[in-house]
Amino acid sequence: MTQPKIRITMLGKFEIAVDGRPALAGMAQSRKIQLLVQYLLLQYGRPATHAELTAALWGNAGDADMSLRAVMHRFRTMAAKEDPALESCILTERGAYVWNTELDCEVDVFTIRRLAEQASAEKDPAVRADLYRRIIGQYRGRLLPDSAGEPWVERQRVWLHNLYKDSLFALIELCKGSGDREEVVELSRRGLCADPYDERLYVEQILALEELGRQEEAEAVTRRAAETGCLHGDSRNRNLNGSYKRMQQSELAMEADLEHILKDVSETDGDGCYLCGYETFRSICRVQMRMRARYDFSLFLVTVSIVPPVARPGAGRNAAVMRVLENVLGRTLRSSDVAARYSDTRFVLLLGGLASDGSSPMERVRAEFYRRPEHDGYLLTYRLHTPENAPFLRVNQRSKGTENKK
View 1 (cartoon, rainbow, N blue to C red):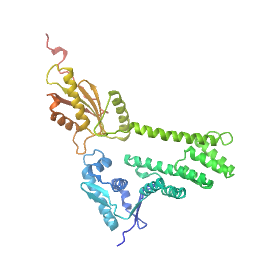
View 2 (view 1 turned 180 degrees about the vertical axis):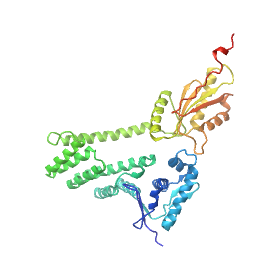
View 3 (view 1 turned 90 degrees about the horizontal axis):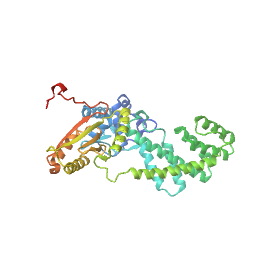
């Protein structure tokens, strides 16, 4: 039996069609069902664990596990009633969920990725140009506009938009090389619909129109660009060719800078928490607190101290146990956590929420610390605060009037 053809649109809108007929329109009535399906589609072929899905869609809500199961049940009931082809579109694999790639399913996002891979390997300029045209034709708008703002959407959106722009400019260069100025004008016009403030697209369109002898149109585009703030002056007093060359040089320099910066910030070993100096820690905290104010995720500030078993331990003894604690923090905490030494006996930490099972990562730290024989009888104590609430200050219970007199 021939499988029905499932076509999924995620660029410009979100739509699922089976054999050309719109399907699962009821998802629009449930935000969580729609987000769940979108998340799994963007992972296409990669299983997403229960914990990953609850964190992405519900954050740290206490009832996230039950909510996920309820949403999954509602979706499967809806899919089974609407079309048998959709009943098995989401599979369960060892505590994880995955979109069924065995279905005859075409997703515009992954079509673009496949075409881009083919274009990067293609040597024939004419074939490569055709692949670029197909990429541009597939890109019908931003990724999942109804789910804009979701972090897992925005990361993919930026990547796809950059891929579209790179394909657009690569095709413009090929058209200029073949002398097809008409297509350059049309490609620039199309690109400006997606990026109305891109100066390079205005310049490409103006220069192509001038070479075609369509001076009035070139001047109209120049005025429109100047009104948007993308060009200053007009084509009579602005050397667009010179400006264009400088723009290309700037873009090439930025690409080189980005590659260098990515190498600088990349880590060879990203396991465990990020250990840094206190000044760096303070800057990271400020940025994270700003992000928390915008995106409302859980953030905890923790002070961790070692307490010696004797009244006056030597500095070397304290230093040795602090090295043990540093090792424990680096191996026990998550890669998203940050730690810095605050004093000779204290660390300060920034933790991004509880573990997926709801437990505190500090309990794991304490247990691991006491498992190490090198802890040398020291005790480990910690205080955990939320940055938006000031720490509770303990007041000395003895007032001046009741102090013991010598």
